[in-house]
Image (cartoon, one colour):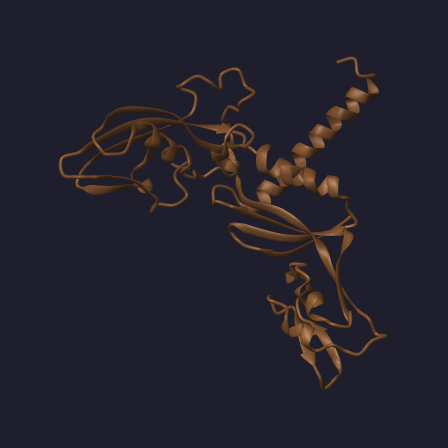
Length: 267
């Protein structure tokens, strides 16, 4: 198996996996979505809320506010499988005490740990009118995406099979099929008497070019064991950390299954 990184930024990574099977690639996708730990607000104590927003809605918005959850932030925090995870005091405390008129933003959340704070400062939480007061205490904890979407580290985690475009040299070149491509993957070159493939990895395999070709000059398929994988995060964790942790989790699950099989399924 080979892995080639195509692009990598603060919140996105795109890479190509070659010589792999669909179940394996899909297992990485699922682990990245639901088995990588992330920090999010879990318990909310609303002491006073004079705003027009219901307490439940406000608590839900707080829970979905992305918090910094990189490896440094997660160090030393209890995981859901730990016995002391449910204790109210075992987490990162947040406080919010504001008086209107103003719009309360995520930057107004005061954290007990300087490393763990909202990823973005400009997320609007609630609007307070003149004289309205908001006083909240909240606790953020580590969790998994399989329990709630607020603990999912990925906003996009998907793969597609690697496109493959072939031409039928037994028929006349159909230059019009290149114009039908909505993504500009193909380009007609009448001077060299061929159709050029500009960026095959951008191909969505929609087959618009195939339908536009009257003589069957072009065919679009895919390589069954090659994949283009994309991971995007909400900024709480670098996408590379999400990928590496997902692979670690998948490896641990595989080791556990192997051990279970070697013991004859006695546990």
